[in-house]
Image 1 (cartoon, helix red, strand yellow):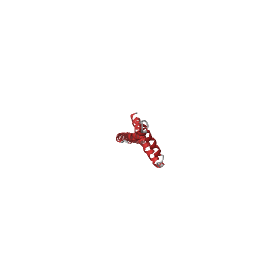
Image 2 (spheres, rainbow, N blue to C red):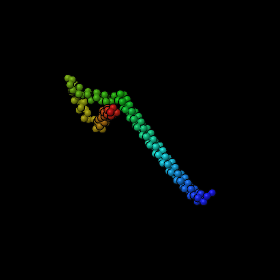
Image 3 (spheres, one colour):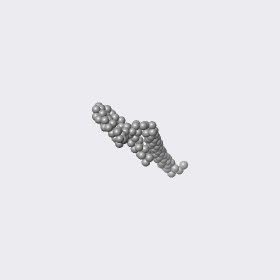
Image 4 (spheres, rainbow, N blue to C red):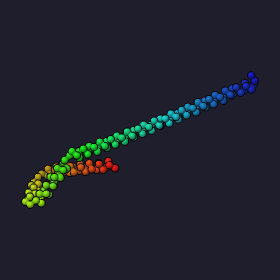
Length: 143
């Protein structure tokens, strides 16, 4: 062994050890960055899945609501009933000899309690408003 190898041996070991540690640190930093990126990707994927599920649920809810309103509009006869009832005095007023009965009916209604007239007004309003709601929901879901 020469005196040069005696001097350079420890220096070489020191430099090699330093480079090896530096390589290990860089490798650990890279692994931490990869783990961070993978975690972020998993979070974004979970967010995307949740968004799709939420949108699907909202669409399903909207379709169920529309089906319910449409089914209700086909089964319900209240608005047609009230249209018929409200139209009877109008039609009878133009039939000879019936106008007196229409007038007498309205005179009789003046004696009816206010709470009853309010109740009838609310029932008529609801029957027509419900149909309007069905139409609005249909138009909203068609667009």
